[in-house]
Image 1 (cartoon, rainbow, N blue to C red):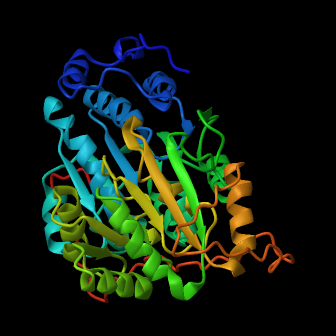
Image 2: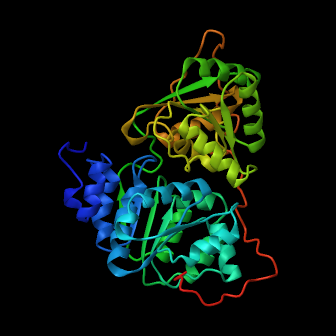
Image 3: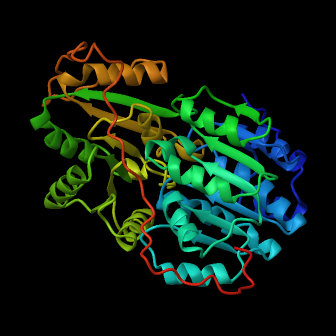
Amino acid sequence: MMQQNVTFDGLGIAPKILELLDRMKFTTPTPIQLKAIPVANEGQDVIGVAQTGTGKTLAFAIPVIQRIARTDGCCLILTPTRELALQVNEVFQQIVPLFGIKTAVIIGGESMHLQLKALKKDPRVLVATPGRLADHLKRRTVRLSGVDVLILDEADRMLDMGFRPQIEQILKYVPKSRQTMLFSATIPGGVVQIASAHMKLPVHIEVAPSGTAPERIIQELFIVKKFSKKQLLDKLLKQYHGPVLIFSRTKFGARKITRFLREMNHRAAEIHSDRTQAQRREALEGFKRGKYRILVATDIASRGIDVVGIEVVINFDLPDDTENYVHRIGRTGRAGHVGRAISLATPEQGAEIKNIERLIKTDLPVAELPDFPREKLIPFLRSHSNSPPPRRSRGRRPTGGRRRPRPGRSKSRW
């Protein structure tokens, strides 16, 4: 338990940033911030493991900004999704104006021309998704030789999405004499391999066991027949009146759920890989502003939605990857708030439920409503396997055409 009198004052943070944190009402550092900021300020490589929603972005943003302000260096931040890249950039934008530092976001689904213009403005913080950055490298429109701080944010998710080839390619262009920090909620074997190959004696900071669900989230499980899930969803949405985030396993399912919700006169939007970047941005911003009470998403958004005040997360479908359960429910109960996570399972999903319970090291409390009698799980339907086979995404591959713009001469350090 963190002591109440612990503040940001003793962590080696510049006075200008401390004043800003006071104005933002940030008075007490989270456990990951308390442990990671002093180590990162010393220039050491860091592997930070913490539950989602515990302030990991600020834990690396403050040391990064202080370092590049002092050394005139550059920072590259890799994130798995466009939404998370924009979220990380928002955190940096709260601090960098104090030091006259510019940022740029390089993500898929947005104009390459506008990104080239942003690069010419000499940003010193580049937030990117691996696929689009690899595309820029292929076109020779970006250089990484000036990077002296590299951040791998949610690296396990990047591997899940099939980005390892792009990450390995990008790392070839980044100087070896750099500081590297890796932050995530889980550290599977693939991430350990990257850390071993590309980090220098990293300090391992783990403020909660990998895969642990946040303590302030009330978890419930409903076991119903598949044909009853929509009716149960409608019943639950009448029970809760705040912002709701619903997760679907597929983009086709997300579209169907959104259509059903709108037919029931709910204000709902959807966010998944079939939506354009403009549509995804509008849905997320509309959800934040209250235009939409319900946001329906696939796992592409499980770590890219940073909205304080989500009352309940509903897993309409259980995730393909068991570890995504923790990231999904971590969208509620953020910044110290109490949250609620409800999962809908069918009787045939006994093995998947058991895998989730094994991951979070606790049993999911089973709930029921009068009109929806509790069904019995079939626990050993997939006893031959520890988990359902994950449906791996191919990720974003470089898609550069034959024509490559000439590198030209530019003042941009990228």
